[in-house]
Image 1 (cartoon, rainbow over the protein chains, first blue to last red):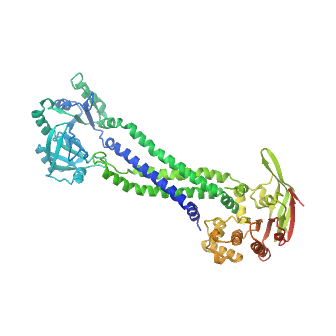
Image 2 (image 1 turned 120 degrees about the horizontal axis):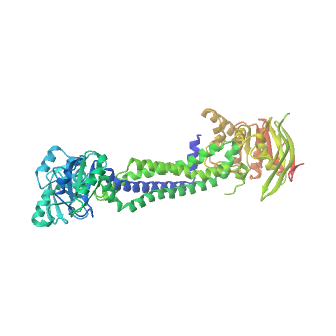
Image 3 (image 1 turned 45 degrees about the horizontal axis):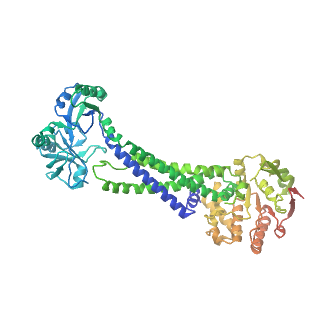
Length: 386
Length: 223
């Protein structure tokens, strides 16, 4: 008989208790994994930002537009490599539940500034050439079973009316964090219609994306851009793309922080549950530990037995939890609207944290019973009545 | 025969609520090798305490205990644990078997501390089972055995490492008359046939009949 056999036999001595504790740990690991996945999915936009891109928006609020004429002025600033722009279009595709980002953009420059959107040369050329065309991310194409040549009708709200876009390109994400759920079409196409239907809204863009030559100059160039439009009707606020993305998260930071804290609180709770189980088990076995000490088992043997038993339960619970987390995350990904979390998958760091949490729970919850078993005198152990 | 156990001027007292309660008073005692020694006395006389001190699971307040020239009162906890593993076999009143282990595994437990091979361990366990006459019950769990059978497993566990001394604390105290008789026959056989030095504590005069020497303790004094 090996000591592992004794550890396993002890761990499953009370089968129902062991099963419930393992189930508790598994549920905690699942909750931890899901919460961490949501948090990392929330930050994916920040992770996907590039250091050599700045975003220039209206100083008062992101929702106010900027004049199209700013483009050429920004382009003149030393250190600026290229300028593109976009406008939030929104609209309804099929019904209001079908959420994904729809942008009117500068077709000529958009894919130069965003090289992480991988589009074939042929598709890009066709897109640039046809004013009513659009490019969609491959996740959108998969979700709605769309292909090149299909027409996507959009019911406009910010830009009222019915709009029809012909798919001329499907981009692939270059990186894991690249959003493959966007729909991009010509700003010119939208603007021409605005000129006819709402002339006062023509010539407006949402924000500029400024590609710079040297990322270390981002602060300096941002200041130059903003200085350029100081005291104008539409003052600007320029910041790095990362800062811009983070400012979006600022409004939800309290929720994210709460989810972060909650994920660790769950681990703390399950630590107490397993700790309680281990204390009960060790207490029930006081006489047995006394017998083992009498036979000649040393303190390190008892440490191995008690910690081993705790680790067996926590590792099985952790492994079960992790195993179930993967299909659960996949299921959630199907349920959550595609554009809400462009990347929704378990990050390696989440797996590492979950494994570390399970092991830590196993070790920490055994410390109190270990201390008790080590301090216990043999004769006191024999007198113990549980 | 030379004395295998020499107890010299042993005193033991417990402290409870800042009061010192004397349990053993200046005990001196020699037990010869191969002896079946019985300590008798009423409850609270200190016989189990003396047994625990000789077995190295408790420390005296003063005095020395020599087991084959080793003064065990000078050993630290770790050394004492190793010493017990190779020198002492224990038989308890309530058997104290591990309930999740089979009879075979319970007997094998002390061998986990040795460097014997799997085959050697098997040989030892089977030999011990054979001595106590339980080879047909080796895969039974304690709850599947009678009290007498459990005590026989406990005896097998005590002798499986071939210890120098076998200590038994009220080994028949929890058994019916027939089972108790069987256990005493077994202990007698271990003493006579296998030349084991046995130190037994009991308050049962029938159990003490098997012993080759009997001493009485009363209120911590050897009489």
